[in-house]
Image 1: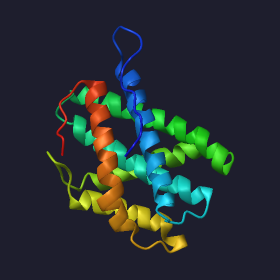
Image 2: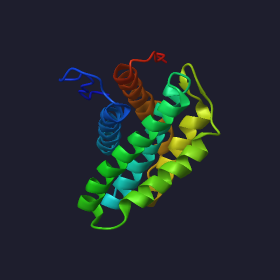
Image 3: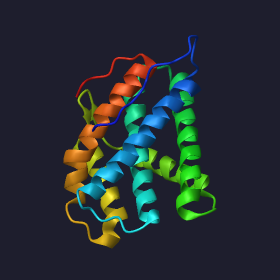
Image 4: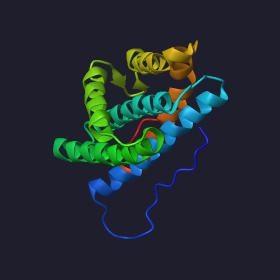
Length: 188
């Protein structure tokens, strides 16, 4: 995945977990958007703005869960909760501004947060080891992407998401989370 990501701070001084979460949030947004654009280039049909934003929501929920699993055990539970909540709030604000552009006015934040919370419960059932997400974790993302794209009769969405898009994107997210939080992240 060829996205230029800046995880260096311009100003000196301590950065709060909220500051760090916003950097990770920008990265997650950009990675999800790049996955969507790459899928369109690979001739997966995305027929509407609503379908595209639903795909972005599923990707973002997946990357938030990846981030949470990466930091689990490396931050205190209090810091982990603070970080993930700040990350979710940052992404909700980003989605809100973009969804208003794509879909018009509405209560987009509540819907987005509800989806994040549902996916957090769903992904909790799946394995995440030193090498990253297990088969079920990746398959669930593929299934959710396939559901979103079902209206356009896209074949191979599950396999494409599991084998091509997710692995490349996970590497980018892992790298940035490790750099921004100063934690050890496995290369897998």
